[in-house]
Each structure stands twice: as C-alpha cells, then as structure tokens.
Length: 437
Image (cartoon, rainbow, N blue to C red; front, side, top):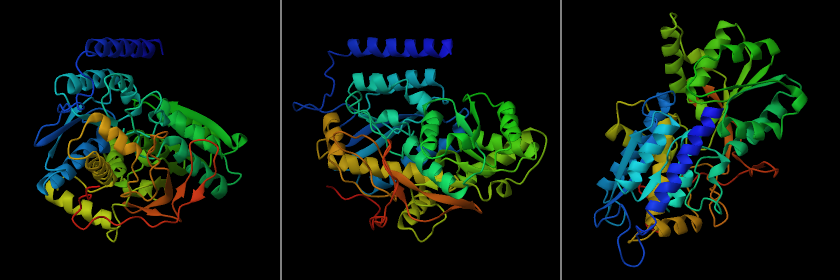
C-alpha cells in the first residue's frame, strides 16, 4: 500500500509540474482563430493508452483495433467535416506507471486533440488530473468507475460505459430477486472498479446473505486462497467484478475444487469468446486440458450494447461488415462491438463540434448532446453529468453468445430506483456513419 501511495504521489507531482511548464503554451489552442492541437485541414489526431500486453490484454487488446477499424471505415466515407481521424494508441501493459509516461508523450509530443477511451480504472486514475490540468478532452474512459463523472473537478473527462455502481445495483437486484435466501459471495478487483461494483451490489443484496468477500490485486495471478475461502463459505452464488483474466482464473480454481455455484459476472469480465480462449489457454499452461465453452454456460451477466451473436440487430450487422473488411483475423466478439460502438460515439461528438473543432467545443457539444445509439439505454450526458450509459439488460451465456432476459433497466449511481427502459434501440444509419448535427 505504501508503494502505491508513493507511485500516486510521483504521478501527481509530475502532472502538476508539467501543467505549470505548459501553462504558457495556450491550453486549448483552438479558440481565437488558431487551429486546435491535433487538428489540421485534413486530419484530427487522437490518442489512447491501451493494454496491448499484460494481464488485461486478453480480450481488451482488441478494443483499440476495433475502434481504429471503425475510424478507417468513416475515413473511407469522407471522414468528419472533410477530416480523417488519425488514432494513435500506445501500449501501457495495464501498468499505471507506464500509463503516465505514454499519456504525457501523446499530449506533449504527439499533441493529440483528445485522449480517447483510455482503458482501465487503476491506469487512467493516474492521468485524469494531468489531462484536466492540460485542458485535454478526456473522452469516454474505458472503465465504469463513477469517478469519471465529476464535471466540477474534471470538466474534460467523460465516462461512456455504464458505471459499476449502476451495474452493481442491477446485478444485485437480480440476485436478490432470483436467489432469495441463497448464500452469496463476492470476488472483485481491489480498486475503484471492484469496490464500486460492490457498493452497487450492497444496495440490494442483504448483508447477512453475503458470506464471503474476496478481492484480488491486478497483476497477481495467484487467486487460489480467495477461491478456497469462497468455496469453504459454501456460497450458492458468486458475483464477480473482474476482468476476463481473473474470471477465467476463478472459474478454473472452482473447477479444481469441485465447487459448483451459480456465477454472476460483470459485463467487462464476461465475454464468452474471450473466456473460452482464456480457460483453455490457462488450463494448458497448468498441464491440463479443458473445453472452455461448457464451463461458462449459464453464467449470468449484463449488457448495454448489441449482442455479437444477434445477426438481426442492425448494429451487429454494421460492425460485422466493418470487422470482415478491416480486421477479419480477430474474433468477432463483445470487445469488437465495444470498440466500434465507442468509436461511433466519438464520431458523433466530432460531428457535433462543428466544422472547426476545438477542445472546448467538443466538450460543450457533449454536454449539450442527445446522442442515441448504439446502446440499449440512453446516455446521461449534460452540463452537470459526465456519466455514460445509464443501465443495462440482464443476460445469460448460451453457447458463445449472451442472450438478453427481459427489458433493459436504468438507474442512477445513488439510491434511486431501478426502472424498465421501454424505448426501442435506435437503428444503425444505412451508411454506418453518424449524420452531421
């Protein structure tokens, strides 16, 4: 813990120093007639830190490739207001120290217009103050931490996916109603990601029903003690707020212990195709062989985007077409849908920022936006809210797909009720490109 505080102190000191050093450089650079950083007559350059290697790479490393594929598709259609989107994403290995260095390079050397979809709660937390001090739009963080929704403190930062407290409430309500009286255990990442999820769960699952709470540190793959403790608690239901690597590790540990609870897994750790591959790979490294798919059947999860296996959905059809054209070697799964969906929202925001986009202008456009699609629930964007999607729909893994159950649900990140959302999901535009607003 002392080491983590030291790293945070160093990161914040570095951010503050750089902010002072750059204070005479014009900040936004996009008002008063001059071009905004990262914007030329023909291009808009954005950047991101992504886990192309490290513990979060399985599954998540495809997000950025999917976003780039969507941007390439838009560029081939003429771009946004005549400008093509240049997307520079750099590996940070899901390591907060590396996140700081690569983000500073993107801002100071590459002079990106915005940081887009930087992935991870423990990683992005180390650069959010810096980006706001530099007045760099920090758009659609790839994390459901509620900390991105602080417009007074972090006016440049916007979430995108449903936040973990909302998700925890929705999953907790499902557990309470479906498994009334059953023993419940939690397995969660020991940072804002997992802790926010637990906050949401605890709003609905009675505390005396929770018989074990076990956390893990990202980077340490030895979770045997946590699995043993949960198995010994004899919990009937295990709720996981984990990234895919740790969902797979826990599932294999439970298999080894012959422990067979019902698994309820947060959205970010439940992609069926990713989990199948991880289960088989990890088992092989441990000297055994398993068939991954049977081990995840019946897992309960939630979703807020089009299901990759739903060929009748217009968004799935659009993203599959782009996938097949630009990144056919990658499996078409939830990570691909995620990456293309968040790229779609960025294109909407850039369209709304106008023909001469500025950093200030894109932030203001988002706060005034009423964007729809590709999600099944609405965004919460406004002047006093930088939260993203407002809910999700419960689903169950069947085969290599997540099959929705019931209606989408929306809620807030406080004590507000969970309510059905009855409006239909918007259709994807015929040409796949958002119209200029």
